[in-house]
Image 1 (cartoon, rainbow, N blue to C red):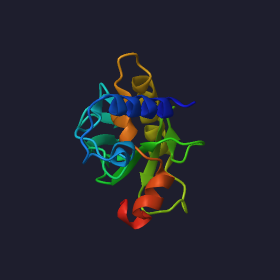
Image 2 (cartoon, rainbow, N blue to C red):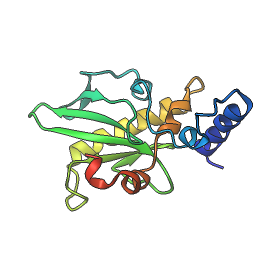
Image 3 (cartoon, rainbow, N blue to C red):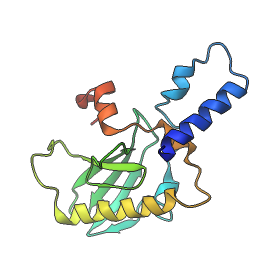
Length: 163
C-alpha cells in the first residue's frame, strides 16, 4: 500500500472516530482539494526570490487549489513558467517526480516540444529537494492528501481550467 493511501486511511479513521457534524460529508473530506497555506516546507530551505540555478528564481508558490499547488519560476531573461505540483500516481507524469509528487510543466505546449535542458535540470533538482523534504521524519504530510494526480485533475476540472 502506498504512503498516500495510508495517510488517507489514517485521516478517514480520525474523522470517523471524532465528532463529525452532519453537514460535513465524508466525500468532502476524502476529496479535499484545497489547502490553507502554501507548502513551502517542500522546498525548504528555499523561499520566494531564491535562485534555483540556470538563471531561474522562485517567483511564487500557491496554496493547494484544484488538486495541485503551482510553483512559479522566473528566468533572468524575463521568461516565466508554472510547475504544477500534483500527487504521483503510478509512473511519473511530469518533467520530474519525487516519491509522492509529480512536477508537471504547464506551458501550453501539450508535450509537443521538448523541455529546454536547463529548465529540465532545474525541475529535476527541485524534485530531489522535495523528495528529501517529504521523506524527513518531521514532515507533516497530511496537507498533501489534498493533491490529486494530473490525470485526476484533467478529468475533474478539464485541461482548459488548470492553466
